[in-house]
Amino acid sequence: MPFTINTRNDIRGDYHMTLEISGAGNEYENILDCLEQTEERFGNKTAVSDTKLSLTWHELAATARKIGSSLAGFVPAGKPVPVLMEKSAFTLAVMFGTVYAGCFYVPVNPDNPGERLRKIFETLEAEQVVVDDDGKKLLEKTGLLAEGKLKPVPAEELLGNDADPQKLSDRRSGSRGSDPLYGIFTSGSTGNPKAVIVSHKAVLQFIGHFTECFHITEEDVIGNQAPFDFDVSVKDIYSAVMTGASLALIPKEYFSTPPRLLDDLCARKVTTLIWAVSALTLVSSLKGLAYRVPGYVNKVMFSGEAMPPGQLRMWQDALPQAEFVNLYGPTEITCNCTFYRVKRRYEDKEKIPAGRAFPGRTVFLLGEDGRRIDAPGQQGEICVAGESLAEGYYRNPRQTAQRFVMYRVNGKEETRIYKTGDMGSFNEDGELVFAGRKDFQIKHMGHRIELEEIESAMNSVERIQRSCCVFDQERNRITGFYMGDAEPSEVRAALKKKIPLYMVPPRLIRMDVMPLNKNGKTDREYLKKAAQEKGGRKV
Image (cartoon, rainbow, N blue to C red; front, side):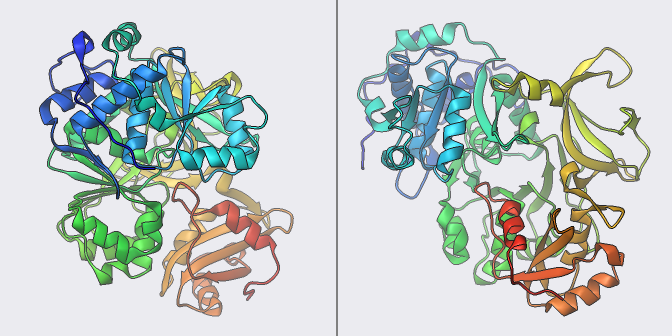
């Protein structure tokens, strides 16, 4: 349904604070201070655009103030506000509107199945959920509205009244940097999703370092790939808010047709890609770069999975002047804790380092005995201390206590750290090298095996573009999936020369396209189910 955003009657009033600009973001306490500073500097410049709507910085902020005034009329301060809407420029205004209302937003992806939606709303104890038309229909279809516990709030109805400066000032007056800004749901080991709660200050601190490190300015156009319920989008959104860069939202369907995607990147003159590895490799694997090169792009940052060197080389060949950066870090530490500027071309058998810690962070390894590991080449669990740790998991003190613990990082006073569950080591240059998830480590034929080591070997096989390995515990069998022209027999013969025989998957299945989950990562759960089915190419 089309709608009109009228900002003429928007009165900012005395709740607006003018603050000094600084890249580090440490002089701001509330993200709205930063948004309003950018509105003041770049009011008529495009802030965010999708394929249907474009908003200037003033239009974005003014719309958010209207929405915030409406929400403040019936949602108590400090509460989570789930937003069940497709990614769009208007959705971003709704998210900021929840912040103006003194609440925190929780993006909920409409691609979630009904049972997961139920668990999300139960975790939040949500009474209202902001929806677009499709979101309301989804709630009706899943039966969640019939239970009478949840009230859908049509987003467009929140635009009905002018902004109320006094109401917004009252909500803003008691705000602190430690107040929640957003919640993002991640998978839980118990089968219940966990909501990671991240504060205003955590985002301001991290994005301040992020934009300084990679020289993001108001001249940039950031091409957003990630859905809003995936923390990669946090870097897109708040890099734009902090610098005045423009945010170009790319529809998810474009990633299934690379020519359409590349035409869009060129038409909107996108300069910066902060994408999941799977999104980048989808483009290169499907020969998209042979169709058209996005020539305005000068920064390519990737995260989420290990980047196959062969796929990275395709992007390096297409964009020889661009800077390429490997980013590492889970949602719980606010986006990323390490980065590595790719300085050269990597061979297929090599691993691209995760690099060194961002300013304000300490990244270290702990062994199974709880002792710190500093020697090069020795693996341990990656742990993070310092700025921008999440507040924890919403209404889940037990799992918060398990992962966020106290530790004497430098033999001094105990400090709060996050144990990532990821394994890594340091190379001779002191750079972190990611070794895989603890839960991707399996015991097979008496050997402890990292599935990602097998994947690295498969990716180095000639004519393989991308791979993924899964383990069926019941059958005690590894299955390898891959994209490429190589026959399974060729892959098996090549793997025998690269890894021990007990690591070679007894079953190899060639895929036309590697399936992706809603966050743009390889869908390992889908592949696990596929591996359990009969058929495929066993060699």
